[in-house]
Image (cartoon, rainbow, N blue to C red):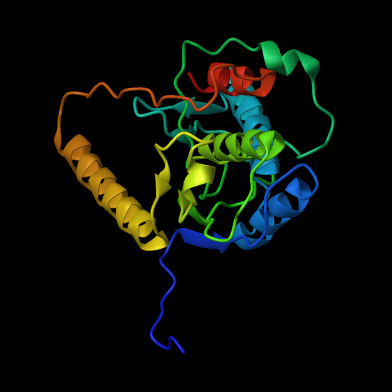
Length: 230
């Protein structure tokens, strides 16, 4: 019917046509994974593992970080690459790294051999027009989903929510229609592009405000990621 529809680059839209409650939360999460093409929790864990390895190599002098936090090879060739094994060193969680700021382009080739899944999207829009019921477990699950995607730099938007469902949730990321959500995130992308242009043209570094976290309490992995990257 709609022959000229084009999928926006970096955006995925999912329509879930069932209530979200304790009995089908797992099915809802599976639908999200199938739509976006990756597991947000696995991506985060792999990024954390890569950051640990990168930090080790920086301390060994095999890698270095520029003023902008971009990782570069400091001269070592294959020695800078470490295998991606599944054995984690418990001491890795306690590595202090406050003296170095690290920023990694996760969609480019990494300086360590850790298979970090690519994240080809920046926004996920959930069309909730057919969701007629939401229990406590469903609300908690939605909050965790937002948090899981937020920490890998993917924004989650909820559209077409019914009034009684909206009343159970905060309204900062909810829109009347999918179209409204898409227009908003397009404006967000344009704003980021303008901001990046200003940063590139400015000689003095600008102080960036830290994004407000969805949850008040961070788990142990969040604390580890923050200590590695700051």
